[in-house]
Length: 138
Length: 141
Image (cartoon, rainbow over the protein chains, first blue to last red):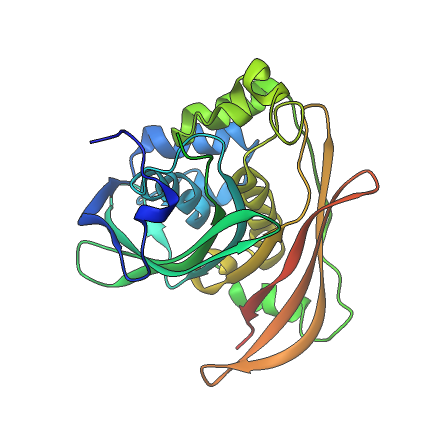
């Protein structure tokens, strides 16, 4: 099996990955994200239960995007995200995506996928839609 | 969490957010790649990126989105983290060396799922270049 999937191997309705991904909202991941984005907001520092920025989604979405096995060079074209509750450091989220649309525009192959991330108690944490230009087939 | 404080700040169309400014360096892009695990060569490999559509490395779109989220959380005292929504198109690249400015303006008050929400038009630019186009939705009650 090739490391990457060809664009024509993807179909509307495909679920990725087959087994939902698990993502631990660890202190290390949150600290790295806050440092990389120069975010020193007091919201995320201190308190008995330390809060994580909801846009840590931009980290776990990478894991989800990688699960599609798109070749390198793909471009993130659009992003919709809805936050349903705050998250805390130490939580574990479970997520999965589903292809909802494919189309070609200006000779560029697009893929649209919906996703959900849920807490270990099953509550919805984040939902949204990702629109990407597929990387060049290899 | 003072969501009520925040919501008073954008209860009417025309209310403007603070402006968040970030200077983007290759080091920052590399740090974001480390933090997110996204080492797509279009972001971190100048040689690969030189042969691509932009001719040089560009920042991760999700990093720019993180700046937008940061601005919205500062404006809403963290309420955006709990109930916010964002819908954007990445219309232009952020290059190494760019200074990105992010802000928002309440465009309208709309109803969503039975709640009154501010619809916020987002502005995100690097100099005269537009980076993002889109809006955010934030419940205000």
